[in-house]
Amino acid sequence: MLQLIGRGAHPHRKYPTREEAHMSTEKTIRDYFAAIHRGGWQDFLAEDMTYGFNSALQDLGKEDYLNGAGNFLAMTIDVDVKHLVIDGDQAAVISDYFVKTPAGATAIFEVPEFLTIHNGKLTGISIFFDSAAFTALMKGEKV
Image (cartoon, rainbow, N blue to C red; front, side, top):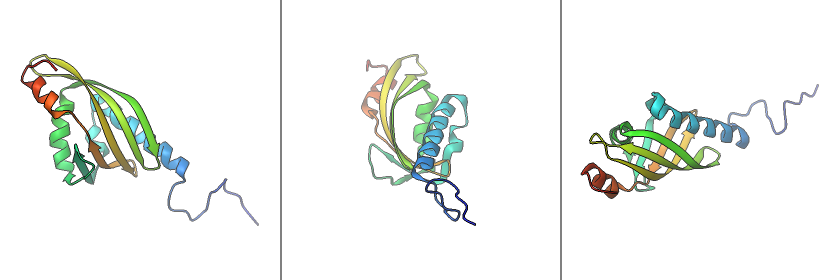
């Protein structure tokens, strides 16, 4: 007896279809960004994740991301995902991060990020960030 499981489905398939990967990637990314201010964003990071700062070369690891991005995210009061483009388990995101320094200065940083997702975890992140403007903001200079 022939049993149809679904269009393109295969009973022994280990990997999700392109559509399933797209939906899983989008959900993970949206949940990650929501968790930045709700709490628990760290739970979305894979133990063996790789990280690139102002570089597509992801030669840093999870601890580097927790220290660098963690300090930055702690100063954000909001984040707005403006653009999200997904290709399977990879995504390009452009977000506005609304920052408030301990001294009370505020600024908005537009940050492009390239993310790779596997099993609901971020396994690769490359962030491109205007660190000179952020340093100026921290010094109390107008950005």
